[in-house]
Length: 419
Image 1 (cartoon, rainbow, N blue to C red):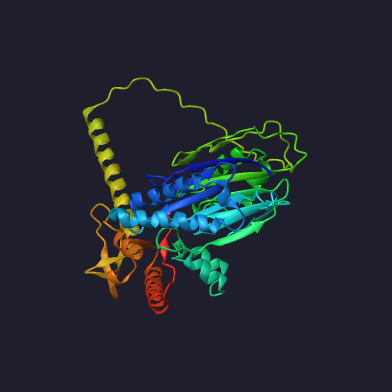
Image 2: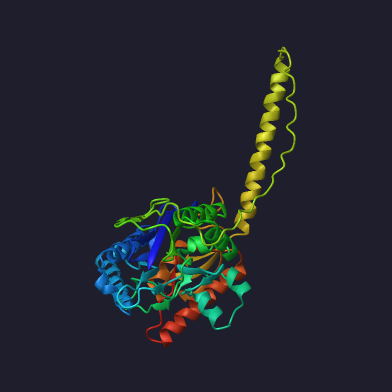
């Protein structure tokens, strides 16, 4: 199986750091999305990617991939136990590995968390992986609809993640890609910002996988860029493809660098299997008005100067009043779930306050923060933002339900929040 690939990552527009990691070295393609505090997520994803980069091909025989990931999980778990400041850190992991020993025409795809793998086949975009999230479980059980899932307050809460528990369950698929197929691995920073038709269009229209990865990142940022964004795009080549792979490819492992190309394996002159014309939009510009002629210099009296100062002061006061009113309205329509005297509580406003607008305690529940798992405790102490009191109540109900379920069923996966 001959492959051509490109990869890119970006911290997005709202995050101060990039906690995503990626790997593309020809034998392993992977995306990891770290979580667990300011530094924990970055450490967890880097540990996963670094450990995978050391894996030998002999460990990648069919069916052995889960054992490899179990070792990666143990590395992250032990590091979190060793360093108290990293307690509770974890990472998602979605990866693709070509099977080279027994069947060179098949690949294995493994997933833990909500980073996704897509397959573009005959112009159809197929989501291979399933999201290991609280809402994903409800959706698969038929307890909520697709529409409800898209706006659910706990849609980013993970039910499975590497590094939080000593043992981990993984999903594993074997697929048989055909020449011309495209595999996309991505973090939720991409899949949350783009709908599948947008992803499909970019993959179809770009015969260069690196250009496709870069365009997906740019499009996700244009749509909001609220999270770290990572994309690994892999093209499956046919035997009759005119382009040839180089004898050796320079591979690198990187996290945090925007637009990083992880493998230099460009295939100049290759012909795309599908040719689709780019969609264009004609923009009509309104005519630019002629500038007003410049008046001759006029004498300004003291009274006119005073009037100008008063007018400026009036306008400034009006602007400040509008801004203060807007902030007050924003705060009154904002809510978050936090902590009050050791218990889970619902506040009106923003955690920490905005200017002189401090949060207002709405309700204190009977749920002890200490009774929650470490990840949930960290979430509540940081403040979980919700759009309404009803949404906050729903989140608290989810906390109670998860806590009761974990208490009743030993071994229930720890619910955590994705990065």
